[in-house]
Length: 259
Image (cartoon, rainbow, N blue to C red):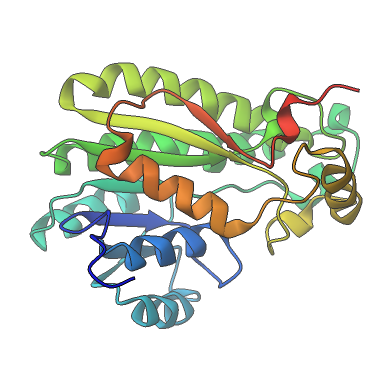
C-alpha cells in the first residue's frame, strides 16, 4: 500500500530475545522493521552471536549488543554501549524466559529451589534490571513491552514454575508502569496464546494444548504469531499512548472461556 505512513518511523527499538526465526521476539522485530523502526538486537553470548547477527542483518538492524541477563555487569555494559552509540530508545521489548527442563516435566510440587530461582531470575527479575538500565536512555518517553501467558493466572497443566514466573512478571508490569509513568514511559505485557516456538516445545504436551485451544477459543483457531507482533506494534507506537500497566490478551479469546 503505497504512501501509507509507517507507525514506528523515527523510533528506535531494542529487542531482547531474538534467537531464531520462529521466536515471538523475531516476529516482533520483523513487524517493527516493517513499520520503519530503527532496530537494535541483543544476543546472549558469543555462541549465538553469529545467528542473531545474520537474522538482524536481514531485518536491517543497526546494532548488536551482548547481554546475558543473569549478569548484572552485562546489562550495565549493554546499556552503556547503546548510550555511547548515541541511541535514544523509544521501545524496549523483553522477550526472555527460561525454566529447567525437568521442572516442566514433573509435578510443580517437586520444583527445585535452584530451578525456581533460575526461572524467576531470567523470566521475571530481568525485566526490572533491564528497565532500570535502559529507561534513562528513553528521554523522549516510550514503551517497554514484555511477553506473558495465561499460565500466570490460571493453572495450565505442565506450565508449572513458568506460571509463577509469569505471575511475578505481570505484577512487575504494574509497579514499573506506576514508577515510570511520570517519565512518560509506558509498560505493558502481551499475553499470547499458545504458539509453537522452539521455546514452547519445552512444555510437555504442547500439541495437546494447541489442539484444545483451537477447539475452545472463541475464534476457533490458534494464535498466529503475526497477531502478537502487530499488537506489539500498537503498544510501541503512538496509537498506544494511553495504554500502560496492562496485560493485553492476543489469544483468539481463549482466556475468557470457562467450561
